[in-house]
Image 1: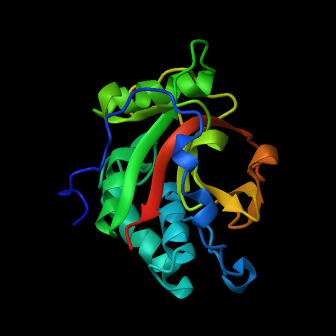
Image 2: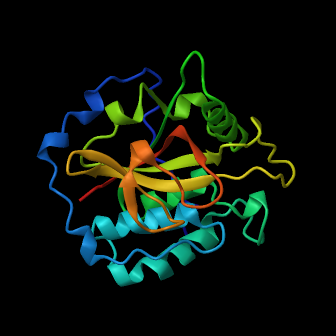
Amino acid sequence: MFLSLTLIFTGCKNATTGEDKQNQDNSEPKENLSDIIFPKQNNNASGACSLAYYLALTNQIEAEEIEDTAQEIYEAVKFDPQAEDGFFSYCNPLYLAEAAANFDNYVEIKMTRPDAPSKAEEVLSLLLERIGIEEESYTVISSIEDSLAKDQYLIEILIPENAESSIDLEEITDNKIHYVLSYWYEDKLVTRDPFRGDQQPRSSFIDGSIESWQFCNGGIFLKPKN
């Protein structure tokens, strides 16, 4: 049911330096997060799990619906609906953005495009290109910190520290991608990782497993319409 929607893209390619934060001071503080139990991801469903976290934090679903909602979303947003493992069992960011729009949210893909990109930033650019998201379809930003408004959330894309600097979608590869939910909480930029379910400062993010991850500095920016 998610894949028939048209994505809400601005098509703006100019870097922003703070204009996206114009409404942030009017945002309401988050509810008490200690009252919500955040289940961990199943399989390679970190993108779907991050979206379900967002829906719970913005009161679009109940906390007890997170796990079932994440699984339902996951089945609709995999690169290949039949894939059970490998790269194609991960969440496709294009489908994930469409799923978020289906829940009546403003949705936009944004990413940094520096002159000297990191390996992770190069991978994200290539990934979006390979799945059909042209440069004209997303907004180029200066940084996550400057462009994420206080009333917005961000499903960020990460790659492992030791990942190759290319992604070939023509065949299943050993490359991995991971999604986390980032947002402002008590004036601090925090990240909630589906590997653990807990909230950590984005600046000191470690996924809690053997691998450490690199931020691609881009992803799906979200805000409820109502």
